[in-house]
Image (cartoon, one colour):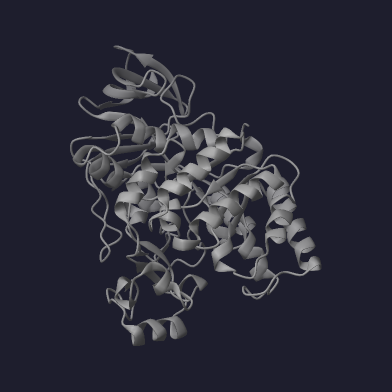
Length: 456
């Protein structure tokens, strides 16, 4: 008898570009049989009329701060990930680990998590550990110390690669980026938050491509919407395509919103930002107390930056049509860039994947269902070397999400960013039910995935 049988579901086949109605048998965390009338299981789910997809893989998010929970659950973000169908996610993006990577990885490995986690080692995190001023370049000796830490994080601890947050530390030189990016001589993935957005987007894309070329490492361009959706998306995508045609391994990710979010005290909001975006102070929404839900004027903006620099703010500055253009590009994956402080922040942390499937697939027809699912599952799995994930096939990990394509939609808003989506019926991690009809059933099914277990 199988552990779990899912009957009558519509399964995506990315190779044939079609959906097929079949049953799935699961045993010991793996898909062991797919067919018709395949037998009984200890538990049976009737998925008639529903899509049975690989669990969504979020290649770009920001892990929570663990070990400081007051309610007994450290997974402020991962719980919301699971609720929107994510079964595997990559933290440590934009150069900014939220704590020591080993501490985070040990916590997940020892205690489990709602989802599976991978993580980068962040360049900015290492700079902060050495006390380097973000507006100053690192010295040669500081770079050597960071290179040693990169090697330890990847080779010994299992980080999948190095992430950069170039905009957050304007003092970073190109030589420093190449030195750090090439510190580990084996296989590793690079990811970078660009140096400048809007009018600086094209030069920023060129810089990230050159880092890949000079380090001989694949480069994942972070949230390209917030880099280029200011009138520069077409040219940015053409640059990436040209680099790919030349044999470079360049890809990117994008979240489905026309507003970004980061800490109000960061260099992103330095003098000149509003001129760059052609916006004003009232385009900035503060998301945490004592100013939760308030839009800025000049006085509040400056007060928040000075007194609450860690507060998350949302900037409504991007062009939605260009965000859609990015999502349509074959080498851009769907990712959330989720970052929350105790449930507060940007709704992308709870709504990204259902929003794409509900708004941009069903309602607007900007993507086909299979194209969207491929960008959420198969493509990021291949990029990360997760060869056991990303497809519904025999022998693959039984990480699955079952949803109603006619109902799925995000419900998280900029004032209520943690609201769970509608239309997701089940989320399954390692063959076990984690979420059922919006209710958490098991919150510790996920585990840590180390670089050494990845392929390619």
